[in-house]
Length: 207
Image 1 (cartoon, rainbow, N blue to C red):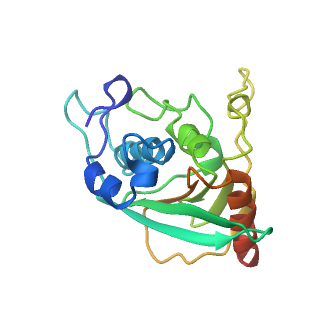
Image 2 (image 1 turned 90 degrees about the horizontal axis):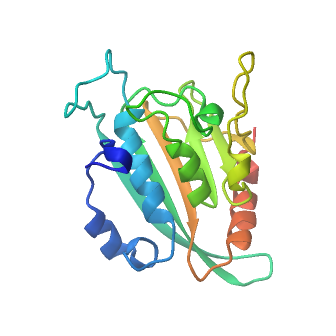
Image 3 (image 1 turned 45 degrees about the horizontal axis):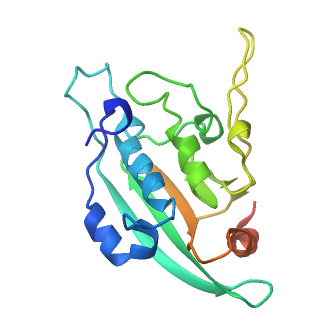
């Protein structure tokens, strides 16, 4: 499935997801969940596996992956009902070595790594968790990062600035590969309230 500039991406059943979660994933939904999930699924190919050489056109190596979705309803601090969708995109590849740097545009090759997909994924979600290659679960704030904050600033002597995580979480590590978890607010819910509620829920897991 060719995406931006024809970059190959993994194929998944969009229609089935949209039928089960139409408020977030239908074609007429204002939610940004669909674009983030598409980018994350594309990265199953781009970041999911070590490829010993750049493949020729039309030849792409995919790591097996899966998408898991579940909607939650809760009350915020003001006792108002809020809904949000939690999505995990998981694959069997090596995982992301440095999630903070992977959220910075302009790193990698023309076969996918330089299309700042992870930056778009972060900006499309209220919150994002990434399991690093070394096994750390890192929590990133997608709601309060303006586009200009997710930028690359470097000279010949400087490395690009990464996007700092909000926290490292002590979550289970029972599998290998790459796992990214997104939280998307329901179009009729308040994103700030969803963010604060989710942040409180994760508080007991902070390292």
